[in-house]
Length: 188
Image (cartoon, rainbow, N blue to C red; front, side, top):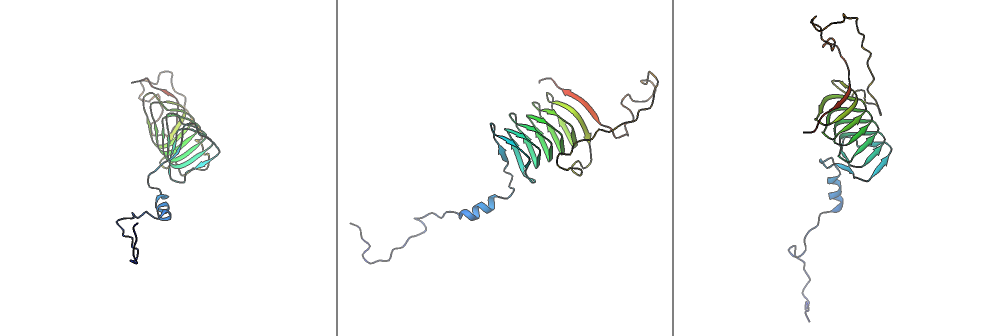
């Protein structure tokens, strides 16, 4: 019915959209462009997870050590192992030590283990059972599974009532010391 009658067939660019080359597109999206890798709720990983400087969101469960650039443990997330990362935000549960420059324990967080940090923030309602220690560079001693080592503090004998003598009940503030205990806050 319709024929070309000997005219050469031409295709114009207005009739066919151009598609991006999948190989080029794949190469440009594999860089660290701020997209987090997500371990979804219901997913359980057993073994070491190394995110090599990338962002990692854990809504499922990891049973093993985690190493990465930025780690967020979601409300349903759980990590049973040691964590070494630039920054760690916990909304869920971590059972193991945390070693990071910046640590944030959100109001639903439950951490059972030691924390070595440069910056620590604990919201009201978070539960932390362990010791925490400030270090200027907490990642400098970051071998796989490196944990905070307790520090022995020598105490000098004091009189029974040290409150009036100008000395603090917490010891000399210039000494490097660890803080341990349980922090439990009420709800807002």
